[in-house]
Image (tube, rainbow, N blue to C red; front, side, top):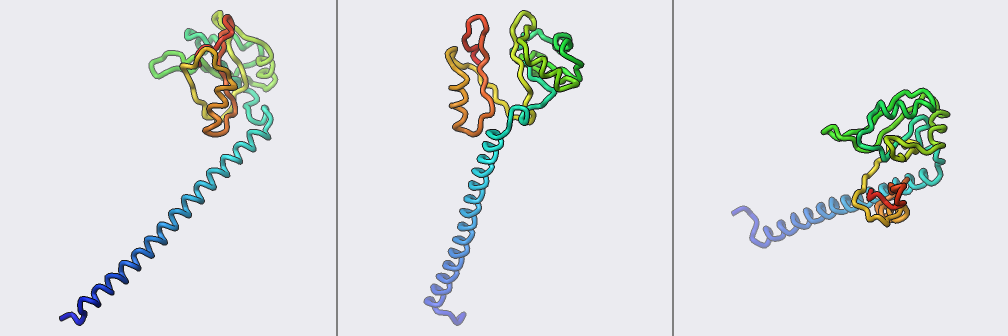
Length: 186
């Protein structure tokens, strides 16, 4: 005989289960607290980003010498960009972004030697390859999302409103066909 009768074994098992349950409860409580802290921190981060975006001027958010060039014809090369924008000042870098198979993605960047040259380039409309292109200051470190298949009557305001449900939207652009004045679908 082990010195315990069946009642003692049940009591010991009950105490062990109660102790495990209490420990599990403490662990679960820590997990719940950890999830709450994480959710609170994420909410605080989101509010901080929104506050910075709201309080920052366009100049604060954008690169002073670099411009985004969108709506490029697919045959546009980096050399075409350099030649077109050279009239505004010395160019440090220019690039047309391409897919892995070499096809143009339809946009690129030009970095000027001075902020004044970039500002001058942004003051006028541009045509490359017979097409009006879109130019604006490049925003460093952004997470951009390409949205295609938009209806032709979609506005930038509607696009912004939709994506604000997921977080702060710093810019929403719908490319417009200058001939028809309707959305190009992206």
